[in-house]
Length: 72
Image 1 (cartoon, helix red, strand yellow):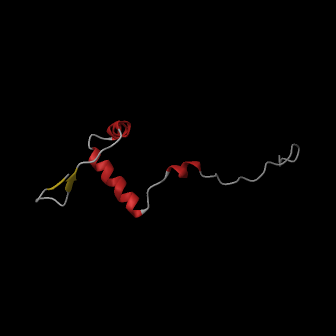
Image 2 (cartoon, rainbow, N blue to C red; image 1 turned 45 degrees about the vertical axis):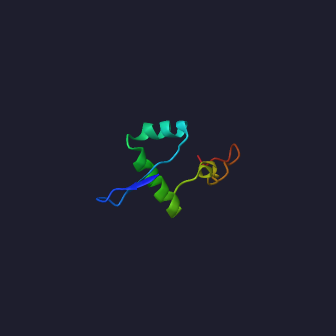
Image 3 (cartoon, rainbow, N blue to C red; image 1 turned 180 degrees about the vertical axis):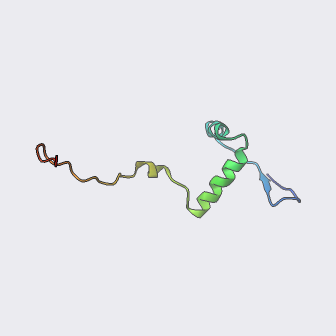
């Protein structure tokens, strides 16, 4: 269901969300529609961080020299 407000460039839509997801959004803000709008904009631009970004490999550090070879 959608409805359009003639005085704004916004369109109201009805969506169905998982209850747990809505609870998490409500912890962030009292205006869930703004959070959803921003998330959709980021997703369309391809700028959103995905969950697999959290599992990326860390940059390698140089190896630690063996014991006794430290530069004191």
